[in-house]
Length: 334
Image (cartoon, rainbow, N blue to C red; front, side, top):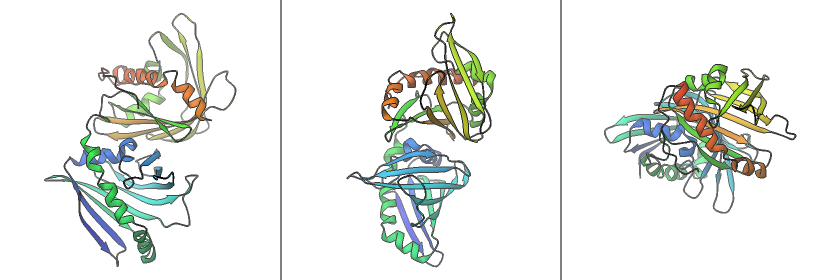
């Protein structure tokens, strides 16, 4: 068990949990920063979590739900109050209803996570502050301490995996719920560089091309809420032209942007795309959560080889825009 101490201070309305892990502090930090890793241990055993949003930046937000063994769901959220990359973050942690909105009938708490190097590897200090003694007793009575211990007992296996989420792996796709897919890849570059590569037309034209043999004659980039973008591609011989358009719904440079997207000339609803950029060791974790109108369309689009096409573009981004090697061994798609 990684937990070395649990201290409850009823006067200060706090609970402090100290745990130690045999890895550098940065490795543990990245496990909390990457939703693919976080959802492998956030939640007691038997209640795996699914993160539909995870913006690890000041003012950011996370949304998740835990799935019970009998099909139950328990939702939650984080509001990031402060983030010191690699060292600490502070969140408001609360319960969420079926729609993901905060549940006002349940208490929230403030949690500070501090990551420290230690002789054995690293030390994680988690300090939870409660709003009142009644809420502290209520949450402890609901099994908060036991749930936290169960969740932390799963971290060792996650941080010991040095390959599944490493720099150099190709983009992977993970189905979320009924209508969403999450595309993830670590890009060898800073958050600002990757953000600029998505918003500078000259840079976009150099990497957002998909397979060889295509050009991008139209590259109208949007940068503010309400603005419309339009991208069009065609084969070198002038055939096969197609494109996408949409508008910016939310933007928080250089960490997060939410846009709509639909194929030009196609009727019906499009998708909602949420781009999140998170600094991790070796580069930037790029995450795109795509929400489709229905599961059938999601499966149809994925069957076209969308993930492979995105990987081709991301490898080109590294090689041609950021000047990094794009030689990767293509593994299985998740």
